[in-house]
Image (cartoon, rainbow, N blue to C red; front, side, top):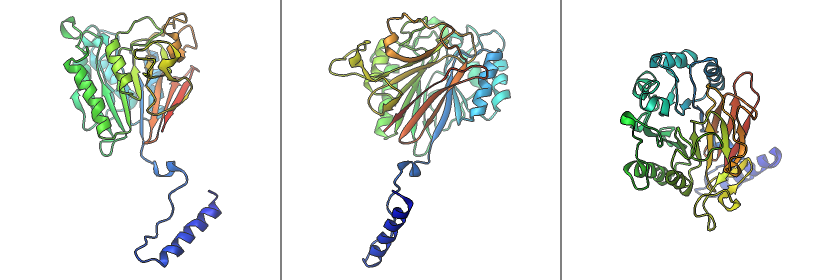
Length: 339
């Protein structure tokens, strides 16, 4: 509505109310819903970091973006150096008070190259209200009061102490915990649900469905808005995936894709993004992979190579996700999900 007409509308409403008993003199609602949608959450997310120059370049980019917090998607130092050295690199770039939140990767889950418990000691949780076991299986509502997002972190498909993987099979205790965390967000009418874990299922990299097909299908069935992964040293984004009458189980046929462009509707399906370009060596994309039809964007050593981080901003009505390259790289990708 033009400013002159809007002013006249407000003036007329006030005149009418002046002659009516008990009428509250409230102006009409804003034409643009975003005018009242001021609350937001802003975070970055990347995994597979290391302690070399690439890691420092990505940390510099995270500092430049100035998020509320960063989510590390597993595989930290890739080294036998003390865990404190990795933590010092992070805090030296981002500050000791910055929330640099962790979930385990396979390089530190079982002590192969560092120990996740020691990483969690020197980069402890700094988000209030966290539920669960930090750095392994946890969730948090953001902001704590009147939250816009529930962030849920799980650890399927990687070995922990003793070499055994945690049980996320259908009906298991950890499956039920994950399902309850998702359902609880919906029951509390939290607008957005984001799940993160180290291992992906859909991938055109070197691995298979390490996260587990059953767990992945459950996330799609529940229409989780966004799933974040590391593990593959690439960037890869799926189309918005969904179940339908003709898509009971996931396949690459068109009926399993709710949408295939960059402007997506909330509640229609789930987007899976692997952000594994946090600093380590970049690996190739398999351009002949049979799962390629799932994907709409990718970057690897053989296709638009880059290091960088996801940059995620959300309000009550909209989520904007962008891959932001570190200094010296040019690949980028972006999409939005909106009500």
